[in-house]
Image 1 (cartoon, one colour):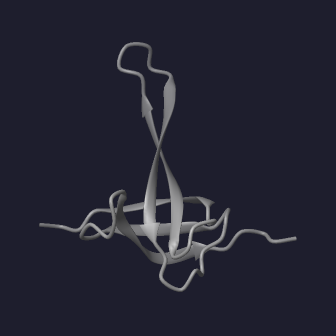
Image 2 (spheres, rainbow, N blue to C red):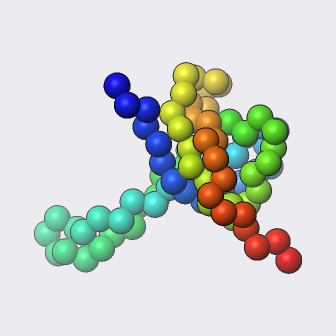
Amino acid sequence: MAVKERVGTVVSDKMDKTVVVAVENRAPHPKYGKIVVKTRRFKAHDPENTCHTGDRVRIRETRPLSRTKRWEVADILSKANQA
């Protein structure tokens, strides 16, 4: 069975070794055809605390690490513009 992967944006990095990643799904409405954006938030394991808010990351499904954490950061695709 293939490992699930998602690409999203880090929306919170306040926890230790955990980031919250928002994954957008854009799909047309079944009846009206307008593109509807649905967002899901996943908690992902970040062992070195390298991700920060605004980073674009790829996350991979893994075994349960805590009550709500079932994903891990696979790699950072792009860093946020830190001014």
